[in-house]
Image 1 (tube, rainbow, N blue to C red):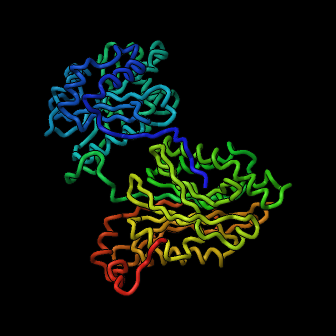
Image 2: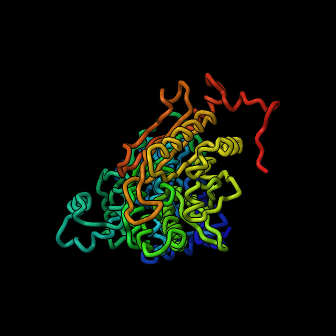
Length: 509
Protein backbone atom coordinates (compact mmCIF):
# COMPACT_ATOMS: atom_id res chain seq x y z
CA UNK A 1 0.00 0.00 0.00
CA UNK A 2 1.22 3.48 -0.82
CA UNK A 3 2.07 5.62 2.20
CA UNK A 4 1.83 9.41 2.05
CA UNK A 5 5.15 11.06 2.79
CA UNK A 6 4.14 14.73 2.85
CA UNK A 7 2.06 16.40 5.52
CA UNK A 8 1.70 20.00 4.50
CA UNK A 9 0.15 21.28 7.72
CA UNK A 10 0.33 20.29 11.38
CA UNK A 11 -1.72 22.76 13.40
CA UNK A 12 -1.37 22.84 17.17
CA UNK A 13 -3.37 25.01 19.57
CA UNK A 14 -1.45 25.59 22.79
CA UNK A 15 -0.59 28.15 25.45
CA UNK A 16 2.19 30.66 24.87
CA UNK A 17 5.38 30.44 26.92
CA UNK A 18 8.12 32.92 27.75
CA UNK A 19 10.38 31.21 25.21
CA UNK A 20 7.99 32.18 22.41
CA UNK A 21 8.71 35.89 22.59
CA UNK A 22 11.09 36.21 19.62
CA UNK A 23 8.72 34.31 17.34
CA UNK A 24 5.59 36.08 18.55
CA UNK A 25 7.34 39.43 18.03
CA UNK A 26 8.05 38.53 14.40
CA UNK A 27 4.40 37.57 13.92
CA UNK A 28 3.17 40.83 15.47
CA UNK A 29 5.47 42.89 13.25
CA UNK A 30 3.84 41.22 10.22
CA UNK A 31 0.37 42.11 11.46
CA UNK A 32 0.79 45.39 13.34
CA UNK A 33 3.52 47.15 11.44
CA UNK A 34 1.29 50.26 11.19
CA UNK A 35 0.12 50.11 14.83
CA UNK A 36 3.36 50.09 16.74
CA UNK A 37 4.47 46.55 16.02
CA UNK A 38 5.21 43.93 18.68
CA UNK A 39 4.84 44.07 22.44
CA UNK A 40 8.02 44.85 24.33
CA UNK A 41 9.58 41.85 26.01
CA UNK A 42 8.78 43.07 29.52
CA UNK A 43 5.11 43.55 28.53
CA UNK A 44 4.98 40.05 27.07
CA UNK A 45 6.66 38.60 30.17
CA UNK A 46 4.06 40.25 32.37
CA UNK A 47 1.21 38.90 30.23
CA UNK A 48 2.48 35.32 30.38
CA UNK A 49 3.37 35.47 34.06
CA UNK A 50 0.07 36.95 35.23
CA UNK A 51 -2.33 34.79 33.22
CA UNK A 52 -0.68 31.96 31.29
CA UNK A 53 -4.04 30.26 30.64
CA UNK A 54 -5.27 33.22 28.64
CA UNK A 55 -2.38 33.49 26.18
CA UNK A 56 -3.05 31.09 23.29
CA UNK A 57 -1.19 30.43 20.07
CA UNK A 58 -1.62 28.28 16.97
CA UNK A 59 1.51 26.88 15.41
CA UNK A 60 1.93 25.11 12.09
CA UNK A 61 4.84 22.68 12.01
CA UNK A 62 6.48 24.70 14.78
CA UNK A 63 5.92 28.14 13.22
CA UNK A 64 3.71 30.57 15.17
CA UNK A 65 0.94 31.74 12.84
CA UNK A 66 -1.86 33.10 15.05
CA UNK A 67 -2.36 34.13 18.67
CA UNK A 68 -4.91 35.52 21.11
CA UNK A 69 -4.22 37.25 24.41
CA UNK A 70 -6.69 37.80 27.23
CA UNK A 71 -7.10 38.47 30.93
CA UNK A 72 -9.76 38.21 33.62
CA UNK A 73 -11.13 41.38 35.18
CA UNK A 74 -13.71 42.45 37.71
CA UNK A 75 -15.68 44.33 35.11
CA UNK A 76 -17.48 46.54 37.62
CA UNK A 77 -14.15 48.27 38.27
CA UNK A 78 -14.03 49.57 34.69
CA UNK A 79 -17.55 49.53 33.30
CA UNK A 80 -18.30 50.36 29.69
CA UNK A 81 -16.26 53.56 29.54
CA UNK A 82 -12.55 52.80 29.33
CA UNK A 83 -9.64 52.91 26.92
CA UNK A 84 -7.43 50.08 25.78
CA UNK A 85 -4.46 51.44 27.70
CA UNK A 86 -6.49 51.82 30.90
CA UNK A 87 -7.95 48.32 31.08
CA UNK A 88 -4.81 46.51 29.88
CA UNK A 89 -2.55 48.75 31.99
CA UNK A 90 -0.55 49.62 28.87
CA UNK A 91 -0.21 45.96 27.93
CA UNK A 92 1.18 44.74 31.25
CA UNK A 93 -2.17 43.27 32.41
CA UNK A 94 -1.65 44.37 35.99
CA UNK A 95 -5.45 44.58 36.31
CA UNK A 96 -5.78 40.83 35.77
CA UNK A 97 -7.93 39.50 38.61
CA UNK A 98 -8.19 35.70 39.02
CA UNK A 99 -11.38 36.30 41.02
CA UNK A 100 -12.95 38.49 38.34
CA UNK A 101 -16.14 37.73 36.41
CA UNK A 102 -15.23 38.67 32.83
CA UNK A 103 -12.76 37.44 30.25
CA UNK A 104 -11.34 40.46 28.44
CA UNK A 105 -9.89 40.08 24.95
CA UNK A 106 -6.57 41.91 24.86
CA UNK A 107 -5.46 41.01 21.35
CA UNK A 108 -5.93 38.57 18.47
CA UNK A 109 -3.84 38.38 15.33
CA UNK A 110 -3.29 35.98 12.41
CA UNK A 111 -0.42 35.90 9.93
CA UNK A 112 -1.72 37.28 6.61
CA UNK A 113 -0.78 34.08 4.75
CA UNK A 114 -2.98 31.99 7.08
CA UNK A 115 -6.17 34.02 7.12
CA UNK A 116 -7.92 31.71 4.66
CA UNK A 117 -7.84 28.90 7.24
CA UNK A 118 -10.21 30.71 9.63
CA UNK A 119 -7.72 30.48 12.50
CA UNK A 120 -9.25 33.58 14.06
CA UNK A 121 -12.52 31.70 14.49
CA UNK A 122 -10.62 28.84 16.13
CA UNK A 123 -8.96 31.24 18.57
CA UNK A 124 -12.28 32.82 19.46
CA UNK A 125 -13.76 29.36 20.06
CA UNK A 126 -10.83 28.53 22.34
CA UNK A 127 -11.37 31.71 24.37
CA UNK A 128 -15.09 31.00 24.62
CA UNK A 129 -14.18 27.55 25.91
CA UNK A 130 -11.85 29.16 28.44
CA UNK A 131 -14.65 31.51 29.49
CA UNK A 132 -16.94 28.52 30.10
CA UNK A 133 -14.28 26.49 31.87
CA UNK A 134 -13.41 29.34 34.22
CA UNK A 135 -17.12 29.94 34.83
CA UNK A 136 -17.01 33.60 33.79
CA UNK A 137 -20.16 35.58 33.05
CA UNK A 138 -19.08 37.08 29.75
CA UNK A 139 -16.36 37.68 27.21
CA UNK A 140 -15.75 41.39 26.51
CA UNK A 141 -13.47 42.90 23.88
CA UNK A 142 -12.82 46.26 22.35
CA UNK A 143 -13.00 45.89 18.58
CA UNK A 144 -11.38 48.03 15.94
CA UNK A 145 -13.42 49.23 12.95
CA UNK A 146 -10.61 49.69 10.40
CA UNK A 147 -12.99 50.09 7.48
CA UNK A 148 -14.50 53.25 8.97
CA UNK A 149 -11.86 55.63 7.56
CA UNK A 150 -13.30 55.21 4.05
CA UNK A 151 -16.80 56.24 5.26
CA UNK A 152 -15.93 58.83 7.92
CA UNK A 153 -16.94 61.74 5.67
CA UNK A 154 -20.44 60.36 5.04
CA UNK A 155 -21.34 58.21 8.05
CA UNK A 156 -21.19 58.67 11.78
CA UNK A 157 -19.46 55.78 13.61
CA UNK A 158 -22.82 54.63 14.98
CA UNK A 159 -24.36 54.60 11.51
CA UNK A 160 -21.31 52.79 10.14
CA UNK A 161 -21.72 50.07 12.80
CA UNK A 162 -25.39 49.69 11.89
CA UNK A 163 -24.53 49.33 8.21
CA UNK A 164 -22.01 46.63 9.08
CA UNK A 165 -24.56 44.83 11.26
CA UNK A 166 -27.03 44.96 8.36
CA UNK A 167 -24.32 43.57 6.04
CA UNK A 168 -24.49 46.59 3.81
CA UNK A 169 -20.81 47.23 4.58
CA UNK A 170 -18.07 44.71 5.29
CA UNK A 171 -15.58 45.57 8.01
CA UNK A 172 -12.64 43.16 8.32
CA UNK A 173 -12.78 43.17 12.12
CA UNK A 174 -16.35 43.96 13.16
CA UNK A 175 -17.96 41.68 10.55
CA UNK A 176 -15.77 38.83 11.75
CA UNK A 177 -16.65 39.45 15.41
CA UNK A 178 -20.37 39.65 14.72
CA UNK A 179 -20.11 36.37 12.80
CA UNK A 180 -18.52 34.81 15.89
CA UNK A 181 -21.51 35.54 18.11
CA UNK A 182 -20.59 38.92 19.64
CA UNK A 183 -23.02 41.80 19.91
CA UNK A 184 -22.12 45.48 20.07
CA UNK A 185 -22.65 46.75 23.59
CA UNK A 186 -21.43 50.33 23.10
CA UNK A 187 -19.39 52.67 20.91
CA UNK A 188 -16.09 53.66 22.51
CA UNK A 189 -14.44 57.00 21.75
CA UNK A 190 -10.68 57.40 21.97
CA UNK A 191 -10.26 53.71 22.74
CA UNK A 192 -7.06 53.32 20.71
CA UNK A 193 -6.00 56.76 19.45
CA UNK A 194 -3.13 55.38 17.37
CA UNK A 195 -5.64 53.45 15.25
CA UNK A 196 -6.12 55.97 12.44
CA UNK A 197 -8.08 53.53 10.26
CA UNK A 198 -10.75 53.41 12.98
CA UNK A 199 -10.45 57.14 13.71
CA UNK A 200 -9.84 56.20 17.35
CA UNK A 201 -13.27 54.61 17.69
CA UNK A 202 -13.96 51.03 18.71
CA UNK A 203 -16.90 48.80 19.45
CA UNK A 204 -17.35 47.32 22.91
CA UNK A 205 -18.30 43.75 22.11
CA UNK A 206 -19.87 41.15 24.37
CA UNK A 207 -20.42 37.41 24.22
CA UNK A 208 -22.59 36.13 27.05
CA UNK A 209 -21.67 32.77 28.58
CA UNK A 210 -24.98 30.92 28.74
CA UNK A 211 -23.22 28.03 30.54
CA UNK A 212 -22.42 30.18 33.56
CA UNK A 213 -22.90 27.44 36.16
CA UNK A 214 -20.36 25.12 37.82
CA UNK A 215 -16.58 25.24 37.72
CA UNK A 216 -14.98 23.03 35.07
CA UNK A 217 -11.39 22.30 33.98
CA UNK A 218 -9.48 24.83 31.89
CA UNK A 219 -8.56 24.94 28.19
CA UNK A 220 -7.56 21.64 26.66
CA UNK A 221 -9.74 19.30 28.70
CA UNK A 222 -11.23 16.40 26.79
CA UNK A 223 -14.78 16.76 25.52
CA UNK A 224 -17.53 14.50 26.75
CA UNK A 225 -20.30 15.63 24.40
CA UNK A 226 -19.33 15.20 20.75
CA UNK A 227 -21.42 16.54 17.89
CA UNK A 228 -21.62 14.29 14.83
CA UNK A 229 -22.72 15.38 11.38
CA UNK A 230 -23.40 12.98 8.52
CA UNK A 231 -24.05 13.79 4.87
CA UNK A 232 -26.53 11.75 2.87
CA UNK A 233 -24.89 12.45 -0.47
CA UNK A 234 -26.83 12.80 -3.73
CA UNK A 235 -25.11 11.09 -6.64
CA UNK A 236 -25.00 13.43 -9.63
CA UNK A 237 -22.69 13.60 -12.61
CA UNK A 238 -19.87 16.09 -11.97
CA UNK A 239 -17.21 17.14 -14.44
CA UNK A 240 -14.20 18.14 -12.32
CA UNK A 241 -12.52 17.72 -8.97
CA UNK A 242 -13.11 21.41 -8.32
CA UNK A 243 -16.84 20.91 -8.80
CA UNK A 244 -16.88 17.92 -6.46
CA UNK A 245 -14.96 19.82 -3.77
CA UNK A 246 -17.36 22.76 -4.01
CA UNK A 247 -20.25 20.33 -3.56
CA UNK A 248 -18.55 18.81 -0.52
CA UNK A 249 -17.69 22.24 0.91
CA UNK A 250 -21.35 23.24 0.86
CA UNK A 251 -22.13 20.43 3.30
CA UNK A 252 -18.97 20.87 5.37
CA UNK A 253 -19.79 24.56 5.81
CA UNK A 254 -23.38 23.74 6.78
CA UNK A 255 -22.42 21.08 9.33
CA UNK A 256 -19.54 23.15 10.74
CA UNK A 257 -22.03 25.99 11.22
CA UNK A 258 -23.63 23.82 13.90
CA UNK A 259 -20.23 23.40 15.59
CA UNK A 260 -20.02 19.70 14.76
CA UNK A 261 -16.81 17.88 15.68
CA UNK A 262 -17.04 15.33 12.86
CA UNK A 263 -18.63 15.14 9.43
CA UNK A 264 -19.06 11.77 7.70
CA UNK A 265 -19.34 11.27 3.92
CA UNK A 266 -20.39 8.04 2.13
CA UNK A 267 -18.32 5.26 0.60
CA UNK A 268 -17.03 6.02 -2.92
CA UNK A 269 -17.84 9.70 -2.47
CA UNK A 270 -15.77 10.51 -5.58
CA UNK A 271 -18.04 8.37 -7.79
CA UNK A 272 -19.84 11.42 -9.32
CA UNK A 273 -16.69 11.81 -11.45
CA UNK A 274 -17.12 8.34 -12.95
CA UNK A 275 -19.02 9.88 -15.85
CA UNK A 276 -15.72 11.27 -17.14
CA UNK A 277 -14.69 7.71 -18.00
CA UNK A 278 -17.80 6.31 -19.71
CA UNK A 279 -15.66 5.20 -22.62
CA UNK A 280 -13.57 2.90 -20.44
CA UNK A 281 -14.25 -0.57 -19.09
CA UNK A 282 -15.26 -0.73 -15.38
CA UNK A 283 -11.75 -1.80 -14.19
CA UNK A 284 -10.10 0.98 -16.20
CA UNK A 285 -12.73 3.56 -15.13
CA UNK A 286 -12.26 2.93 -11.40
CA UNK A 287 -8.47 3.11 -11.78
CA UNK A 288 -8.81 6.40 -13.65
CA UNK A 289 -11.05 7.66 -10.85
CA UNK A 290 -8.35 6.71 -8.34
CA UNK A 291 -6.11 9.26 -10.06
CA UNK A 292 -8.20 12.02 -8.45
CA UNK A 293 -8.03 10.66 -4.90
CA UNK A 294 -4.95 12.52 -3.65
CA UNK A 295 -6.22 15.84 -5.01
CA UNK A 296 -9.65 15.33 -3.44
CA UNK A 297 -8.13 14.27 -0.14
CA UNK A 298 -5.84 17.31 -0.04
CA UNK A 299 -8.73 19.64 -0.84
CA UNK A 300 -10.85 18.16 1.94
CA UNK A 301 -7.91 18.37 4.35
CA UNK A 302 -7.71 22.12 3.74
CA UNK A 303 -11.43 22.32 4.55
CA UNK A 304 -10.95 20.30 7.75
CA UNK A 305 -8.56 22.98 8.98
CA UNK A 306 -10.47 25.91 7.53
CA UNK A 307 -13.82 24.87 9.00
CA UNK A 308 -12.32 23.43 12.21
CA UNK A 309 -13.97 20.03 11.82
CA UNK A 310 -12.71 16.46 11.56
CA UNK A 311 -13.74 14.92 8.24
CA UNK A 312 -14.30 11.22 7.59
CA UNK A 313 -13.88 11.32 3.82
CA UNK A 314 -16.16 8.36 3.13
CA UNK A 315 -13.98 6.28 0.89
CA UNK A 316 -12.25 6.60 -2.46
CA UNK A 317 -10.35 4.19 -4.71
CA UNK A 318 -6.58 4.13 -4.41
CA UNK A 319 -4.38 2.53 -7.06
CA UNK A 320 -0.84 1.81 -5.93
CA UNK A 321 1.83 -0.63 -7.15
CA UNK A 322 -0.67 -2.21 -9.57
CA UNK A 323 -3.13 -2.91 -6.76
CA UNK A 324 -6.52 -1.27 -6.22
CA UNK A 325 -7.84 -0.52 -2.73
CA UNK A 326 -10.90 1.12 -1.20
CA UNK A 327 -9.68 3.60 1.41
CA UNK A 328 -11.30 5.95 3.90
CA UNK A 329 -9.47 9.04 5.11
CA UNK A 330 -9.59 10.60 8.56
CA UNK A 331 -8.76 14.26 7.93
CA UNK A 332 -8.15 15.94 11.27
CA UNK A 333 -8.74 19.63 11.84
CA UNK A 334 -5.13 19.99 13.01
CA UNK A 335 -3.93 19.25 9.47
CA UNK A 336 -2.92 15.59 9.92
CA UNK A 337 -4.53 12.62 8.20
CA UNK A 338 -4.58 8.82 8.32
CA UNK A 339 -6.12 6.05 6.23
CA UNK A 340 -8.28 3.00 6.90
CA UNK A 341 -8.34 0.45 4.09
CA UNK A 342 -11.48 -1.58 3.57
CA UNK A 343 -10.70 -5.06 4.86
CA UNK A 344 -13.64 -7.10 3.56
CA UNK A 345 -14.30 -6.23 -0.08
CA UNK A 346 -17.58 -7.29 -1.65
CA UNK A 347 -18.04 -9.85 -4.40
CA UNK A 348 -18.93 -7.04 -6.85
CA UNK A 349 -15.82 -5.02 -5.96
CA UNK A 350 -13.65 -8.02 -6.74
CA UNK A 351 -15.42 -9.25 -9.86
CA UNK A 352 -16.12 -5.87 -11.47
CA UNK A 353 -13.05 -3.85 -10.44
CA UNK A 354 -10.47 -6.15 -8.86
CA UNK A 355 -10.37 -4.38 -5.49
CA UNK A 356 -8.02 -5.87 -2.91
CA UNK A 357 -8.73 -5.92 0.84
CA UNK A 358 -6.59 -4.16 3.40
CA UNK A 359 -4.75 -5.95 6.19
CA UNK A 360 -4.93 -3.62 9.21
CA UNK A 361 -7.61 -2.26 11.53
CA UNK A 362 -6.80 1.14 13.00
CA UNK A 363 -8.15 2.93 16.04
CA UNK A 364 -7.52 6.64 15.55
CA UNK A 365 -6.74 9.22 18.19
CA UNK A 366 -8.63 12.48 17.71
CA UNK A 367 -9.25 15.59 19.77
CA UNK A 368 -12.62 14.00 20.67
CA UNK A 369 -11.34 10.60 21.78
CA UNK A 370 -10.69 7.34 19.95
CA UNK A 371 -12.65 6.38 16.84
CA UNK A 372 -12.67 3.68 14.18
CA UNK A 373 -13.90 3.48 10.58
CA UNK A 374 -15.54 0.37 9.15
CA UNK A 375 -16.22 0.73 5.44
CA UNK A 376 -19.61 -0.71 4.45
CA UNK A 377 -19.17 -4.52 4.31
CA UNK A 378 -16.68 -4.36 7.23
CA UNK A 379 -19.59 -3.45 9.51
CA UNK A 380 -21.11 -6.86 8.84
CA UNK A 381 -18.23 -8.64 10.56
CA UNK A 382 -18.65 -8.26 14.34
CA UNK A 383 -15.03 -9.12 15.07
CA UNK A 384 -13.75 -5.80 13.69
CA UNK A 385 -15.99 -3.59 15.81
CA UNK A 386 -15.22 -5.65 18.90
CA UNK A 387 -11.46 -5.39 18.30
CA UNK A 388 -11.77 -1.63 17.79
CA UNK A 389 -13.81 -1.24 20.97
CA UNK A 390 -11.34 -3.28 23.01
CA UNK A 391 -8.67 -0.85 21.79
CA UNK A 392 -10.70 2.10 23.08
CA UNK A 393 -12.88 3.22 20.17
CA UNK A 394 -16.03 4.93 21.44
CA UNK A 395 -17.42 6.08 18.07
CA UNK A 396 -17.45 3.95 14.92
CA UNK A 397 -18.09 5.55 11.54
CA UNK A 398 -19.55 3.45 8.73
CA UNK A 399 -19.50 5.02 5.26
CA UNK A 400 -21.39 2.74 2.90
CA UNK A 401 -22.63 2.36 -0.66
CA UNK A 402 -25.64 0.13 -1.32
CA UNK A 403 -27.77 -0.18 -4.42
CA UNK A 404 -30.89 -1.92 -3.04
CA UNK A 405 -32.88 -1.79 0.16
CA UNK A 406 -31.96 -5.31 1.20
CA UNK A 407 -28.26 -4.48 0.79
CA UNK A 408 -28.81 -1.36 2.88
CA UNK A 409 -30.64 -3.35 5.55
CA UNK A 410 -27.62 -5.59 6.02
CA UNK A 411 -25.41 -2.57 6.74
CA UNK A 412 -28.02 -0.88 8.92
CA UNK A 413 -28.94 -3.79 11.16
CA UNK A 414 -25.37 -4.96 11.53
CA UNK A 415 -24.22 -1.43 12.44
CA UNK A 416 -27.09 -1.13 14.92
CA UNK A 417 -25.99 -4.41 16.48
CA UNK A 418 -22.38 -3.19 16.66
CA UNK A 419 -23.52 -0.19 18.75
CA UNK A 420 -25.52 -2.34 21.15
CA UNK A 421 -23.09 -5.23 21.58
CA UNK A 422 -20.03 -2.97 21.95
CA UNK A 423 -21.75 -0.23 23.98
CA UNK A 424 -20.54 2.48 21.62
CA UNK A 425 -21.95 4.98 19.12
CA UNK A 426 -22.13 4.13 15.42
CA UNK A 427 -22.80 6.66 12.63
CA UNK A 428 -23.64 5.44 9.13
CA UNK A 429 -24.28 7.23 5.87
CA UNK A 430 -24.53 6.42 2.17
CA UNK A 431 -25.35 7.96 -1.18
CA UNK A 432 -28.75 8.31 -2.81
CA UNK A 433 -30.11 8.84 -6.31
CA UNK A 434 -28.82 7.58 -9.64
CA UNK A 435 -25.59 7.85 -11.56
CA UNK A 436 -26.36 7.06 -15.23
CA UNK A 437 -23.79 5.24 -17.33
CA UNK A 438 -21.56 4.38 -14.35
CA UNK A 439 -21.52 0.60 -14.42
CA UNK A 440 -21.74 -0.97 -10.94
CA UNK A 441 -22.46 2.47 -9.44
CA UNK A 442 -25.64 3.41 -11.27
CA UNK A 443 -28.33 3.17 -8.53
CA UNK A 444 -28.21 3.98 -4.83
CA UNK A 445 -30.31 3.41 -1.72
CA UNK A 446 -29.52 4.89 1.69
CA UNK A 447 -30.85 6.13 5.00
CA UNK A 448 -28.26 7.71 7.28
CA UNK A 449 -28.52 7.09 11.02
CA UNK A 450 -26.70 7.41 14.34
CA UNK A 451 -27.08 4.46 16.70
CA UNK A 452 -26.51 4.16 20.44
CA UNK A 453 -26.41 1.39 23.04
CA UNK A 454 -29.79 0.14 24.23
CA UNK A 455 -30.34 1.10 27.84
CA UNK A 456 -32.27 3.57 29.96
CA UNK A 457 -29.90 6.49 29.29
CA UNK A 458 -30.42 6.20 25.54
CA UNK A 459 -33.39 6.41 23.13
CA UNK A 460 -35.85 3.55 23.50
CA UNK A 461 -35.02 2.23 20.02
CA UNK A 462 -31.25 2.91 20.33
CA UNK A 463 -31.47 5.39 17.43
CA UNK A 464 -30.25 8.90 18.18
CA UNK A 465 -31.19 10.23 14.76
CA UNK A 466 -32.04 9.02 11.27
CA UNK A 467 -32.47 10.68 7.91
CA UNK A 468 -35.29 10.52 5.41
CA UNK A 469 -34.58 7.61 3.05
CA UNK A 470 -33.25 8.46 -0.42
CA UNK A 471 -33.17 12.22 0.14
CA UNK A 472 -30.06 14.40 0.05
CA UNK A 473 -29.72 15.91 3.51
CA UNK A 474 -27.57 16.26 6.59
CA UNK A 475 -28.08 14.67 9.99
CA UNK A 476 -26.67 16.07 13.24
CA UNK A 477 -26.73 14.59 16.74
CA UNK A 478 -24.79 14.84 19.98
CA UNK A 479 -23.21 11.76 21.56
CA UNK A 480 -22.38 11.79 25.27
CA UNK A 481 -19.29 9.73 26.06
CA UNK A 482 -20.07 9.85 29.80
CA UNK A 483 -23.17 7.77 29.09
CA UNK A 484 -20.94 5.05 27.66
CA UNK A 485 -19.08 4.88 30.96
CA UNK A 486 -22.39 4.55 32.77
CA UNK A 487 -23.79 1.79 30.58
CA UNK A 488 -20.52 -0.15 30.73
CA UNK A 489 -20.42 -0.08 34.52
CA UNK A 490 -24.06 0.21 35.63
CA UNK A 491 -26.12 -0.82 32.60
CA UNK A 492 -28.96 -3.30 32.75
CA UNK A 493 -26.86 -5.44 30.36
CA UNK A 494 -23.06 -5.14 30.25
CA UNK A 495 -21.94 -6.78 27.07
CA UNK A 496 -18.28 -5.83 27.34
CA UNK A 497 -17.90 -6.60 31.04
CA UNK A 498 -19.71 -9.94 30.83
CA UNK A 499 -17.60 -11.49 28.08
CA UNK A 500 -16.06 -14.88 28.96
CA UNK A 501 -12.31 -14.60 28.20
CA UNK A 502 -11.90 -17.81 30.22
CA UNK A 503 -13.73 -19.61 27.40
CA UNK A 504 -12.89 -17.60 24.27
CA UNK A 505 -10.88 -14.61 23.08
CA UNK A 506 -10.45 -12.49 19.97
CA UNK A 507 -6.99 -11.78 18.56
CA UNK A 508 -5.55 -10.04 15.51
CA UNK A 509 -2.84 -12.11 13.83
